[in-house]
Length: 346
Image (cartoon, rainbow, N blue to C red; front, side, top):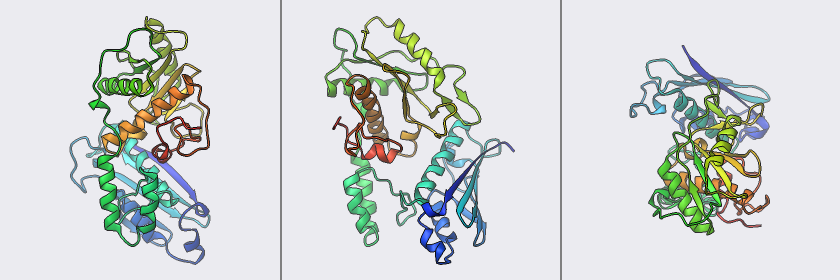
């Protein structure tokens, strides 16, 4: 059976269980609750180990949905750490597209990791709490234990009203003259979304932001073992595309748009949102920012990431420790991205 596996080891000192374990309490029920919040059911277990399964026909989802894939987690609780081995079946009866299956499993691992470390929490129905609206989230966290019904209702309302819809942007004829920024969508990235993004950025920043036609994917970028794209092969295609454009100038900035997850070769980081190849050429990946969230939230995250690269390259904005600034640093998670504002605050 063809499987993709990934092992996550979390020191107990960094988990929400640290005090419970020192008191001799059994933490398996809480682990069961956390995994239940992302769709896993316990199959076997004792105080120090457990086996969970998800997908594989346990629930009915549309054809091709990665939640249909057979997935499992084996957990071992050691004196100093929790070791979790996640796996997804890539070839069995319920197999779906490999990229989707592996990407969704990685998403589940990130959510579970956040839950165990106390970065996120499940609500009364076991759904992970995500801080998309920082100020409100802090208030809600304080009253969550007393009023889960209010929390769920307000969180749902903000998910509906928050974010932005870049496809609703009225795309007008590009302003005359040279482009200040060029968006370079690679094959598979929604060109209509790229056009709407360019229009809003140009309108908000009062600069000329344009979009070139879709570029072919570099043939050597995809790593089948990781189910991700290495970023290095995208640099030259961006340079070649820029050289063919006639409406650019010396300081035009070029930002590639990738429909997928990406990583840097020989780096310990599991993924990255964006990378600057040099002072003019950048690449933004969208998998981690759109997986599992409403389209409006995805669009707002994409807008922020691309505007952040423009801040770095075109406006020469420096990183800041201000958590409300779009230039806040570090920017390591979608939570950081959601909490950041949309302006280049110092």
